[in-house]
Image (cartoon, rainbow, N blue to C red):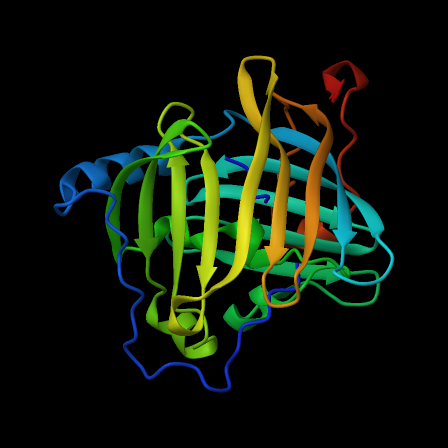
Length: 273
């Protein structure tokens, strides 16, 4: 699962009163089977790229006004006993991102020592893009407070809809984030779209998977748009090369390793996309 995936501006001033919850948008006349929704979400949480992988990517920053810019980066990914684990490099900036029920993240750079990110900092933009650690981490997949909205169709394909509500620590740090609505492809068990909800359930940010690419036996998201609906700018994440089924040195995904260069990927393992 690529949680890949964008300056996401969460409004604190004027945020709703405590306890505000965006209402579910049920796709049928009756309330969908919540037990079925729990089964679907549990299966989705276990989906993703098997083994350890490497990606090269480009972030194309497209503001509403002004010139476009782009930056490149690399990602290593695997799955720990706590959930998906990613190591990201963009220029001199580096992050280690643990997804799962107990998500966490660390950051380091050439001038900043390794440190664990507080919850609020995970929503800050990365390297001048509209992308955030929160976008890559996608902790909302594991939030336990959610409602299944039913099976609908998106771009001609069936997809399961959910609205999920943030836990208390995140709600306290970012009261403008009131929920996240997701659509999950029923065949590929891949995210189709996520909407980060703000005041009065307005969509503050939209994450859209544009296309998938088959690499070996695995389907991976190749292009993802992160649209800031407040600024009307967006960043497009595009995978340009991939290497799957890797064996990396022990400790590659340890926080202390953020100070070290990424391990070399064998050329024969790399597929240009």
